Picture 1 (cartoon, protein in one colour):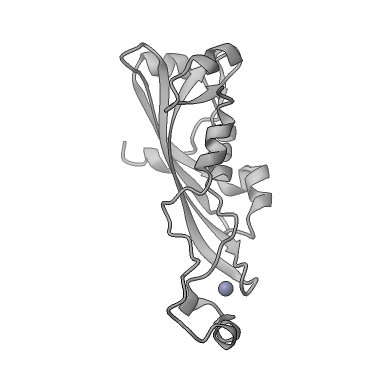
Picture 2 (cartoon, helix red, strand yellow):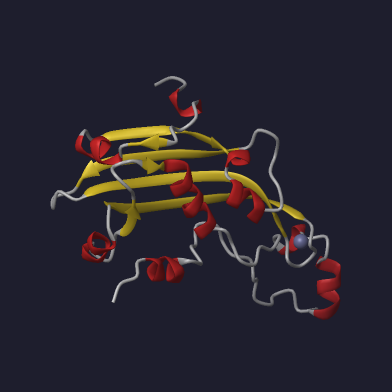
Length: 184
Ligand SMILES: [Zn+2]
């Protein structure tokens, strides 16, 4: 396992077989290889990669599960100064493998469905979806680091005003994630 986590995560796998064998995949995905996500951020360093760890297993109900952790260093556009700000996007998720909408409806609500065709899954696309879900909608520098803070202070002399910076780890999209399940 010495360098395993520095290898590229396989793109196409049979997630059902991996779950039945209780497997863990660890690797990286170059951010340049994620077309939709790449367009959604301001930028990223040359060679920047999302680190991924995925665990495939069966739960006590014999559902096939993939749970994962992601970490991706990117540049976002601060919505106060419109300058670049470095951020590390982090996501943790647990998905139930399904091959149909009917199966998706039957998952317990704590599991989001991961819909795959014919027992093959595109892991890069799945990771990309999870990254897009944790992208902050309104990124802001910490107030003291923001080049626009002097403008801000001119308008808001009370520096104890509520800090609008979103703390990392919070998931502003939990509502969207709930909607994604299409539950009734
Ligand atoms: Zn700023």
